[in-house]
Image 1 (cartoon, one colour):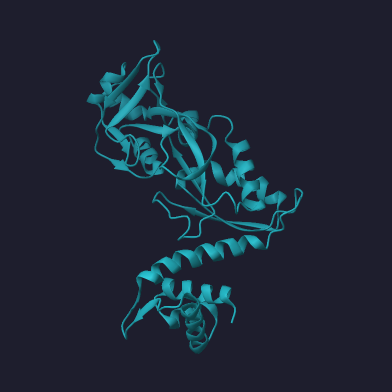
Image 2: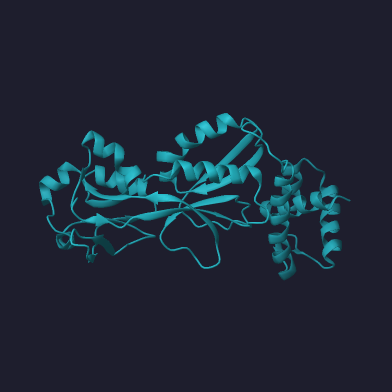
Length: 297
C-alpha cells in the first residue's frame, strides 16, 4: 500500500482527531483509513496512536512520526515541480506563506500580484497572523519575519530593510503636546508592540549617540494594524513600520514626531525549513521578495 498515502491519512487522523474525521476529509471509507493507519504502524514497527472510545492520542513514537510525515508530505508537494530551467511562466505548485497581517495587507498582496500573474500555475496560501509558526509541523514553506534577532539555528534569507516611524494623530498631539526630545516620551501614552521593544524604544540621535527610552501606555498588541488604528483614534504615540504608517502620514491622519531622532531599523527575513529541498517555486518567490523589499519600506 502507498506509504505516501498512508502518511497523508495519518496526518489527517491527527488533525481531525478521529478516523471517521479523516475519512470524511479524504473521501475514504473508515475501513480504508484503518488500513492506511496499519500501514504506517507496520512501517514504523510500533503503535502510533492510543485509541479509546472517546479520544485519540499520540504515542511518543507517534509524535516523532507526525513531524516526519508532515515533512515527507511537504517534500512530496515540491516533487511535482521540475528542477530544470522553468522560465518566467514555468513555476508551479502551491506555497504556504506565513506573515503578519499588516505586512500581508499593506505590502505583500500588491507585491504578489505581478509575481502570480507571471506564474499562473503557482498558488500561494497566505496565512496572516502574529503567532509563531512551526514550519515543519504546519507545513509552512516560507515565514516572513520582521526582526533584528533571529533564533539560533534557523535557516533564513535576509530580504530587505524595514524602516520605522514614530507618529500620532493630530488630536492626540493637540491634547497632550508634541514631544521635543526622546526623553519626553516617558510622559506620553505610548502604544507598544507586544513582541518587540515593549517597554523600551531605541533611537540614534543626530550626534551619533544611541538612547534607550523607557515607555509605557494604555495599550499593547501583537499586531501593528491594531496599534495603527489606536493611534488614528487618538490614543497615543506609536512606533510603526513605515509601510504601515505611510497612508496616514500622507493624508494627515497621522503626524510624525521626533524626526531628528532615527528610529531603530528592522530587517525582513524569509525563514524556511531546508536549504537542500528549496523548490524552484520557493526560490523564485524569495528572489521576487528580495527585489520587492530591497529598498526601505
